[in-house]
Amino acid sequence: MNIDVTDLSKRFGPTRALDGMTFGVRPGLVTGFVGPNGAGKSTTMRVILGLDAPDAGTALIGGRRYRDLRRPLRTLGSLLDAAAFHPGRSARNHLLWLAHSQGLGAARVDEVLALTGLTAVARKKAGGYSLGMRQRLGVAAALLGDPPTLLLDEPFNGMDPDGIIWMRGFLRSLAAEGRAVLVSSHLMGELQDTADHLVVVGRGRVLADTTMPALVAEHSSLERAYLSLTRGAVEFR
Ligand SMILES: Nc1ncnc2c1ncn2[C@@H]1O[C@H](COP(=O)(O)OP(=O)(O)OP(=O)(O)O)[C@@H](O)[C@H]1O
Image 1 (cartoon, protein in one colour):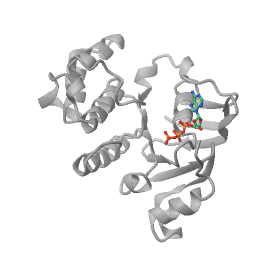
Image 2 (cartoon, helix red, strand yellow):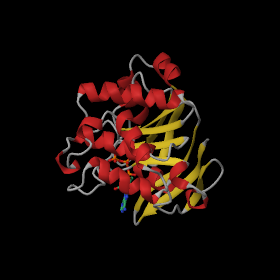
Image 3 (cartoon, helix red, strand yellow):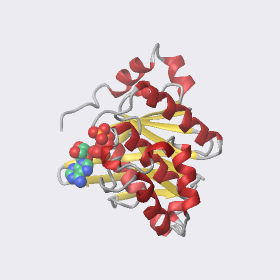
């Protein structure tokens, strides 16, 4: 299932957060969504999820707005904030609560715990989890409904090198199953060996929409590609 973002604009008072943002996310690929702080990545993801209303433009999942999806959590899984759980609750109880709200049973909870490597710590309070474990829990929650599309905001944040390697392989396996996976990051290197496609953004618009091999062929390194594309789009806000 595709995600299609077309000509999105969004202002917050004097700040133009999105300025004609347009790109697509295709099944079977990991699409990296990269740009400096304040480029509009989170706002775009919030608009896709119907959490922010755009001033203009559309964000469609399989041709429908999020709010018009019949089974939203089984269509688009998302991780926006790795701390979005009650710290006193265990990971398993947090997921059970989410699963019940979607008409899913405990078996699916145990499946996603195993998929994200959390089985051994599933009954511990999530408030004591490291940031890397919280990211895994967020991914587990996104996968509960076995959705064909996934949207993950900064899933590498706070992960140690082992965690980053695990996350890279995991994202690739999700795309290999035919899912459309959109992953944001402000570090191009995190997406190395992970993203097939890259959408580089700055100041609310797309600066490059290309394949990873094409980008690497054009610039001598990923970091150089990022710096050259985002030059002038970095600002302090
Ligand atoms: N609710 C809001 N109210 C006011 N301004 C906002 C709000 N949400 C986002 N912005 C502004 O919109 C711009 C885009 O922010 P956004 O969070 O989408 O960028 P980002 O690319 O996700 O950045 P980061 O990598 O720092 O998370 C920024 O200037 C931000 O300050």
